[in-house]
Image (tube, rainbow, N blue to C red; front, side, top):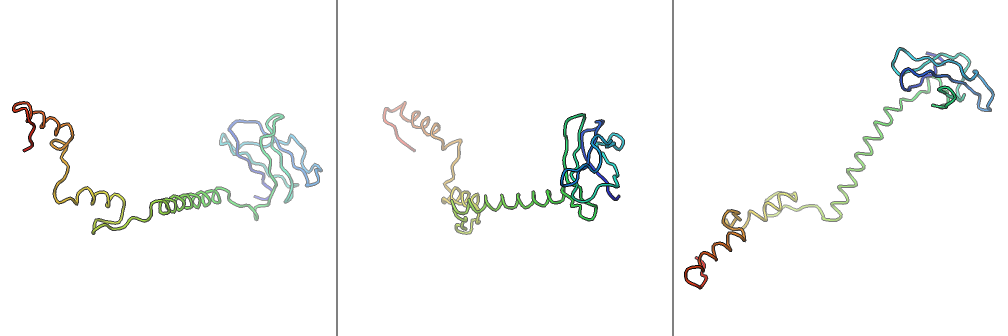
Length: 162
């Protein structure tokens, strides 16, 4: 709608507005009602006197709760779409920064002996590629080895490994 002033604010507030030319001259008197549509938090009014570039000041009682410069519908830009696009770009940039930082600090993982080209693949290859001598916590922990040595040495006085 032409010359529509739109404002989002908490619901059930009593809002007013005034419109001012760029030089400060009053275009629409302060304290003009800015009604809410139902209880939506969407306040709107059509004001045939405002023109592009006019300052709009929104108040609740005597407190200023909003300020903007009126632009006709033909020049309205959807801020949420811009913010969404910027957020997506920021996430992509952040991801690139992290990836580039990791690559700079530790390098790009290489494929170790056909184990895969990721850090986890390389660690798995290092642990598993030991000729079958895998670690078994039930028999290979330091505690289990100590207990085995203690049991062997308790009978003969001289520890021996089997």
